[in-house]
Each structure stands twice: as structure tokens, then as C-alpha cells.
Image (cartoon, helix red, strand yellow):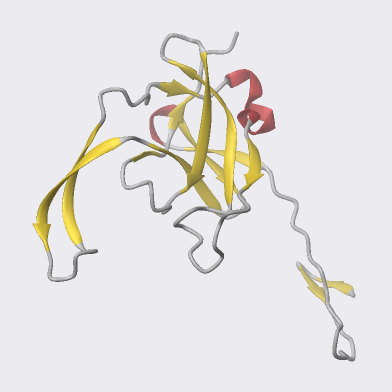
Length: 152
């Protein structure tokens, strides 16, 4: 194994049963977005807050799994959330958590990894939050970016 520019070069006479293991060090990063808001990224994926909503079908198709719908946010859905500024250097306090029930053949039906942490609700109280990868099945209505709380 040797470094070749920005790549690792692995050269070997491979035999049955040989394997190689690669680990990537990942961390939660805040990506600047419009209006001084931030999206959260872990590895190559953006993570979003799934927002509860009601869907109204506006067009049906011959296949029942296909439809066009109009979604409105549920009145009790908490979306007035802010990222804690005092934790910005540590991924805003979010950590990756694995989901053992995920099916690798359908990774977005029940994502294998989520981000767990706390944000601040509109009244300043901490709110436990779980973020899922963008594109997950339950994210037809979602919040992608969040403002940062004021520094204390």
C-alpha cells in the first residue's frame, strides 16, 4: 500500500479470502446556505428534518403508488428551530446513530444512519431532533437549512 498523489495504491497478488478494509473519518459539518442559514452534512449526504404534514392527492395515475399531491404542514409540527451557535465547532452537537433495522436494498425507506442532537425551539428551550438523509421516504415535506442561534 502506498500513497499516489491524492489516492492510495494497493498492489497485491490476491487470493481467495483476501480482503481489504477502508475506514473514512467523517464528521458533521455545517454548510453555509442562503440567509445565514446552515445545512448539515455527514459524509456525502445532507440531513434534513422530516416535517409532519397532510397530503392531498391532486392527480392519480393508473399505478396506485404514483400520484401527485399537495402537502401542508401539520399545525403541531415544530419547524421554528435554530442550531446552537456554541456547538458550531463540533457539528452543532449532532452525532451519527445507526439503524440496525434498515434494509440495504432499500436504504431510503428506513435509513441506516440518522443524526441525533438538540436544536433550540423558538422559545429558546432545547428540542431533541433526529435528522434523516435527504431523499428518505418520509421526507416529502422537510426543512433543509436552519438559522444559528445568537452567541451567548
